[in-house]
Length: 561
Ligand code: ADA
Image 1: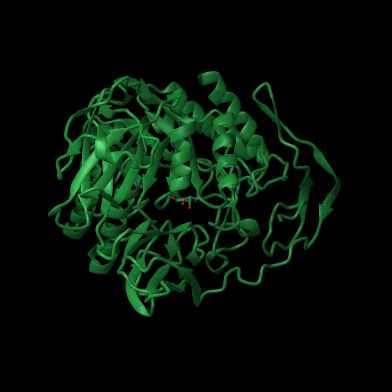
Image 2 (image 1 turned 90 degrees about the vertical axis):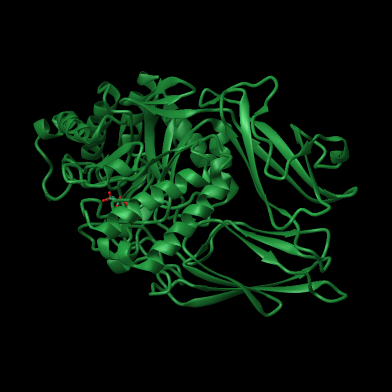
């Protein structure tokens, strides 16, 4: 439970102004009331495991059929070794969903022991996680795990089915099976409710998939009309169903044309927020994810940038259903030229890119894929150039060219890697870094002019759409003055950035930094830079209470609709 006065649940010390937690929207404006007991001190106690780093084990016993199985991990960090019945099956680094094939076993009783050893220390074996990253990198099993039993002792299954829209009425189906298909057939049906039970009666599918499938009664997917369809694929030997996969997809096309992003052939302006997939830890319940998506919609956003790693598949499912457009990216943060020369870093990054692309291939909401957030893209060395091009190509190839590719750059004016991508994406913290004083009013009002200069500069690399993928300012929840760190100053700066994106036709959209405050790693924080142990640039507090910026931004977003 968060502290009711400072909205912190971990180890906050110091004074904080208190606000009640009633959140209400009146005419597009948040209304909330001051808490009667105005101030508290030392209100929260540290949780015992916060900031601890080391090795831990999860163990569980399962009663199974003793057949082959798949273990599906939504996210396990920072490094995870997966063992079943004492045998190491996987050693995984990074933050992306992964799948582990489990051979048949468990003897006559079918009892199986799963053991997951997690290591959340930073180390050379997993260079894709680094202590400098500006969020709290918790360790362990942070997202759901599924144990999927197969009907036979052979590990025969459908690895994935991807449905790529080619027009607003046709799709290409790409699928992969675990092994050779001798004596095996594949059958498919749209919008099946039977869980493949009626699959014998369905049309046969060529093993390489059914290219150019026409979807009857097709309706495009869009944020205002998020229409979804289902494709079921059954794998059979004679009449036995060996595996059954049902995937949900939407018919939507995304393209870059000149300075615009087109969704279903019409220009779309992307307006929204960066969001870290966490509250006080990255373990989020389904209800918490639903609440976040509903708040994003209430705020008037049509766009969310999933900073800075593969997103929880449950969150992306909700974005599909509610109609939010998503930028998803491979784990990375301010990576350097020497990271790009590090073969282990690159191998782990490429693997995470593949895993992200495989897991998210069917989400219509995911229209943009990113990587190497704020990496050293000003560097022109061969290793850096190869790294940027390889990641972009890899993501394109593994998603059948159905998404636009970009990377968030804080090197506007110097960037050397822009020809690797489809969309330019820049970050500037104007009127925020590096001064300790608030900027003059005219500097805050001048923000749209600076963004226009960035746009003009980017055109030297050729005309492609440009997004502002980060812009923001800190606002301490409940702190009301005119100076830096106040909710008032934060709201002014955010308004100016958002107006730049809304009114400049050359800017294809903005993701403000950020949706909600997040905990950072205290070992790299200082109270001047990240007071209360938080990155305080959320328009909502960590526990989703609105700051002034939420109402200011929301009003602009609603007016723009
Ligand atoms: C960077 C970075 C974000 C966050 C932000 C900030 O742009 O990409 O993760 O750290 O700065 O708050 O300063």
